[in-house]
Structures are given as C-alpha cells and as structure tokens.
Amino acid sequence: MHDKDTLIENIDKVHTTEMGIGRISKNLGISGDVVEICKEKILKKESLVERKGKNYYVDIDDCIITVNASSFTIITAHKKD
Image (cartoon, rainbow, N blue to C red; front, side, top):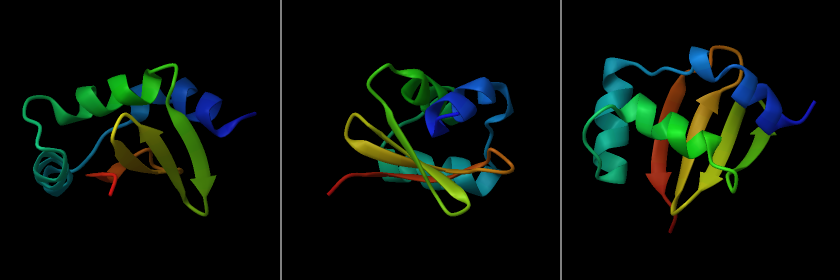
C-alpha cells in the first residue's frame, strides 16, 4: 500500500496536541480548526505523501505537514523555503 493511501485510510485518526495547534497556526499563519485545515490539505488530489522513518511528510500547496506514522499526530507544519 502506498504511504498516501495509508494516511488517507486513517484520516479520522489524524489529530494534534495543544502545543501543536499553536505551532502549526504560527508557522502557517492560519487560524480556525488547524486539524481540519491540515486534513483538507492531506486529502487534496495533488498532495505528495512520503514516509521517512517514523513520520509522513505531506508536501502540498506551499507547505510541508509532518505526521507521526504510528499515532497519526500532526507534529508540525511549516511553509516551504
């Protein structure tokens, strides 16, 4: 199974911590439901998902979203340089 398929199959498990919400909001300059915004980005047809070690890296729009592969916790997200 492809990395993206695995992540999409488990999209309902994707979440983050309180600290994660603050970090992602600040890094991406977004407000509102950070987890829902990240899920929408992950689900976009053009998103590229690659697993490296224990994390998935989702390359979409102008950002990279890092998701732990076992807990489906969004660790961070940042704009691409």
